[in-house]
Image (cartoon, rainbow, N blue to C red; front, side):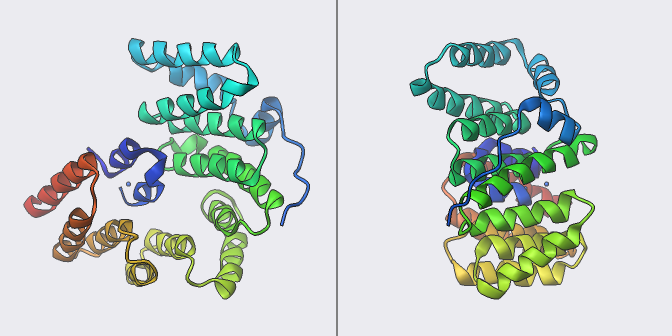
Length: 274
């Protein structure tokens, strides 16, 4: 199983593992699905139909049943059904569809937290989609994070993830870098900020800088054990397998999830034999 698959198994509660394993203002008017399709270049209705068709029969029946219940639900039960749809699509390793339903939940519950969670779903999904639609998914994430920030200007993590989307998914990456540097001046101990800087360093091959950032994360919060996964990845990319294994073993000693422990052990064995 790949690093990316490990992350999907754990769901959105471990979005950071995903990276390793591969003051209120009036909000803008919520765009309709057609408006977003035109703006982002991806027809979500068609995409969801295709994803549903690709599911095995049993899984397809499960999501169809939930969708039917949602279509006939009262406002009191829609939230719980959306939660079920989000979880189901994530478990079926179709994160873009899960993100779409997270966005529908934000439309029903238009607050900063809901839009932030929807943005996080889209942001996470960019790691699993084909390159031809990746930028479209980033645009959906940006739209959600924009709304989260507009509704709560103190939502620093929404600002950080918004900046990261500009860096990774637009033609203006320096806009995102500038946003991150502004945040760092005020809050250099923000873990999300440090993780994003580290990830950008890794992607540009600056593994030494990434390692420094990941180590800083552990200094800030020793309970943030996913940092050991990131360190292992950076050291592996540097060709330092033994140090990578040390960090994976450190992570194993701290994590409780049985599924993750099994997959990480398998990956350690793979490193030792290659």
